[in-house]
Length: 317
Image 1 (cartoon, rainbow, N blue to C red):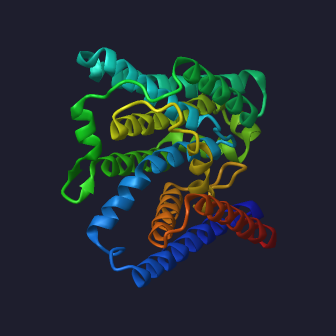
Image 2: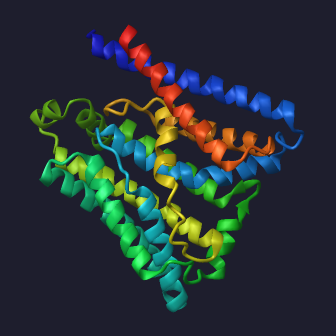
C-alpha cells in the first residue's frame, strides 16, 4: 500500500473523530449550562437553523472534492431568494413553475462557473469570486430592499414540521442521503474523487474532467438555490443581503468535517458532523448570550484549529 493510500483514510478518520469528540463536548457543555438545551424543541430548532447551512455545505463539499471552491454560493442564495419572492409577488398563480425555474437558475449559474473554469484555466477562487460580484451587483441594481412576496403555502412549508422534524430538516437529510449514495455507489461519484485526487490521472483514465467539474458546480448552485428558496419562504420576501455571510459559513463545516481543501478526500458523514458541530456551537453560544460578532470570531478559530490539526497530522504520517 502506498503512502498516499495510507494517509487519506487515516486523515479522514482523525477528522471524523475530532469532529465527533468536539460535538459531544459541546452537547455536554450545553446540557450543563442550560436546562432548555436538551429539550426536543431546542433540538428541532437547531436542526431547522442548520438545514440551509447544511445544503450549502453539501454543495461546497462536492466542489472542494474536485479540487475547486465555490465563492458564489452566497450570491446565488441572494439571487434565488430575490427571484422567487419577486416573481411570486407578481405572478402568484405560477409559483410552482417559478420554484422550478429558480432551482434551474441556481444550477445554471453553477454550471456556467464550472464551464468558465474549464475553458479559461483560471483558478476557481477567482472565477467564482467574479461571478459572485456580478450576481450581487445585478441583484442590487434590481433592488436594495426586501422585495416581493411568497405564497402562504410556501411559508407554511418552511415553518412546518412532520412530527418533531422540521420540513427543511427533512429536505436537508434527503439531500445528504442522495449525495452519499451517488458518491459511494456510482461511477460519477467515484469520478468526483478521482478528479480531485489527481486530475491528470483521471483524464488519462478516460474520465471527463470538464464534465465532472461542471456537474459539481451545478450541484452546488442547485443546493444554494434550495437554501435561497428557504430563506425567501422563511421571511416571506426576497432580501438582497440574505446570502452575504453564507459563502464563508458554507466552508466551515466542510473543513471541520475533514474534507481536504486540495480535493479528493472527504465524506458526506464528515460534512454532516461539521454542520452539526457549527450549529450546536452557535446554539450553545446563543444560550450564553455571546454576541454574533464574537461567534464569527469563534467560527474562524474553529477553522484554523481544524486545518492545523489535519495538516499537522498529514505531515507526520
